[in-house]
Image 1 (spheres, rainbow over the protein chains, first blue to last red):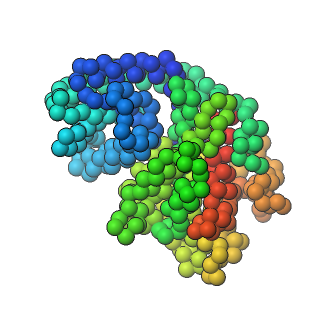
Image 2 (tube, rainbow over the protein chains, first blue to last red; image 1 turned 135 degrees about the vertical axis):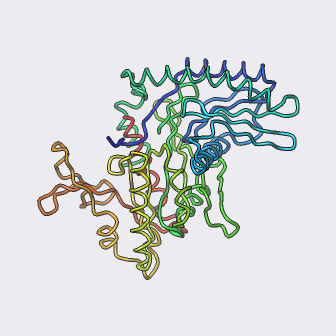
Image 3 (cartoon, rainbow over the protein chains, first blue to last red; image 1 turned 90 degrees about the vertical axis):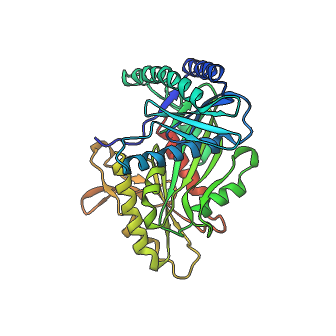
Length: 164
Length: 224
C-alpha cells in the first residue's frame, strides 16, 4: 500500500538522553572531537562533544545528501549499501555510519586519534543506538502516536499563524 | 518525514520545490532568504554548477512561528530541474512532507512542465508516497511574461485533479485561496480533487510567500 506521506516520528526527552549518553561514551573512548546524529531526511537529532564551529542545520542536510548519493553509488557497483563512509582531511576528518537504516552517526576527529580507533568504537555505538531506535520505532508500531498528538486540535492556531 | 523533537521543542518538516529547469525554484528560495528576518533562517546552501544551475539541491531552513511551544522549522529544498539529473532529484524527495511544483507559465515550456510533473509522480511512487495524499501545491510562475499561458490551460494540463474515492469527501470543497473556486467538485458526474494553485512572479517575490504559507499550513494540518 502506498504511504500517504513519509511517516511522522518523534524524539522524546528520555530517548534523547539515552542517545546523547551513547554519543558521550563514544567520544570518550575514541577521543573524537564531536559526534552528531542526523536522520535520513537531513534533520539534526542530537549532538555531543565540542561546540560546533559551523551551521549544524546545513551540515545535517549535506550529510544526508552525501549518504544518499553514496547509497546509490553502492547500488551501481552491486553493493546493497555503504554502511560507513570516511572523509579524510589534512587536519580534520569525519567518519559516518548508518544506524538502523534510519539515521546517520557522524564523528568528527583530528590527529589526537586514528580512523582505526574511531571505526572500532563506532561499531559498538551503532549497536547501542540501533537498540534505542528499534525500541523507539517498535513503540510507534505498537500504536503509540509518533507525533504524540502534539498539534491535535490546533487547527485554529495553524490558521492564525498562516492566515486563512 | 516530520520529526517532532521534544528535547529541543521543535517540529521539523521537509518541503521540496520541484519543477522544470529554469522555472524559478531557486529564485523562490532566494526570495524567502532575502525577506525573512535573519534570526529566523539558517544559511542557504546551494550545490550548483559554475553557471549557477542547480547540480544537486539548494537548501534553506526557516522558522515559520511557534505553535503550542514548538518552533515550526521548515527545511526547504529545491531539486535540479534539468532532465538528466534525475538520480539526484529523486534522492531529495526522500522523507518529504510537502511538495511545491513550480511550473514555468511560458507557452513554450508547457511540454517541459508536463514532463517534470510526470517525473515527480514517478519518483514519488518509487518511494511509495502518494502525491494525491500528501500536502501538494502548484505555483504558476512567470505570470508577468507576455507569453504566459492562461491559468485555465495550465490547470487543464498540469492540475486536472484525481477522483475522490472516499464518499465522506464527495462534497464541494471551496478553494480557500481563490474565492468562488473549488478544490473538490463534481466534473461530468465524477468527484474530483485538485491541488491548490498560486500565481507568482518569483523574481519580484509576488506569490512566493503565499505558496510557502499554504504548503506549510497543509503540512502542519497533517499533524493536527
